Length: 379
Ligand SMILES: [Mn+2]
Image (cartoon, rainbow, N blue to C red):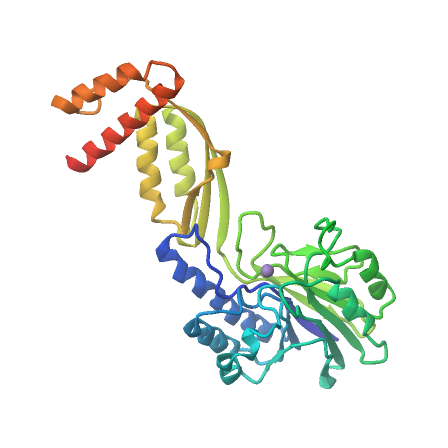
């Protein structure tokens, strides 16, 4: 039996604009920590070989200190690790894998597939056929191309490792690099190739119906639309080359979409309860959609809650496109806001204006909210 650990899309060095500034170093570190966790999984689960199917690095141009920390994490593996360049870290003249920093600090168990030369592991009776991206612009199906090079007598276990979009999952009308499943699958059904390890999709996804072609997904979630990220695949190839899979968790970071539809004060309190119920907020990136109707005083309370919770999360953004919140004046007066003198006069003028036609009314309410905030900051 051969036990592979299949992973991809580590995206080491990825930046995300919607993270709170203090959360970004934690996100960077989490991606490195995931690498050491993967090394522990490889140890504990007695994996023979690790394959990383592209986008190990977010870019070929990485901060030197960060790259050195990545390479230090790679040191924690005790079995061979095959890195196959993807579209983010292609094997072009600027390749990070041929940089002086990488070569001088790269531990010996790391094998980089600079080109499509088959990688022999005689002790494991295994050959890896890599399909690295030679540049950012690829004009052919590299994965099926790699399959054409596989010789059935080359080894007991024959595995292709590549990167890119499969046409049955992402429609490929204008993508010359699309992996065409109908071309690829015959290699699997005829057992010329035993397993195809893919990267590119950050969601763990089975490809086709052979059970022999998978996207592992990213080990640390990178976006809201990913399903079943945060894991790696353990792939067992039995002596008769039948395949069985298991998954292992690699991170607890989460990207959560939270929709709140407001119908008055009670729903503001409900949102607070929902926010309270989210565990490990410092590892959660939250995207809020706010809809419905609130009176101004309740809206001001909502704003205060959002401001207070913002700092607790790794990211806390509003999904403007999915938000549509209507603010009504409601019961409001200079007494409820505790305003006096000129401020009270200004407020009364704005309240009068807030019952005028829609556009001016909403500007007037915005002005009331601003007045309230400024008053709060000054008093
Ligand atoms: Mn990727």
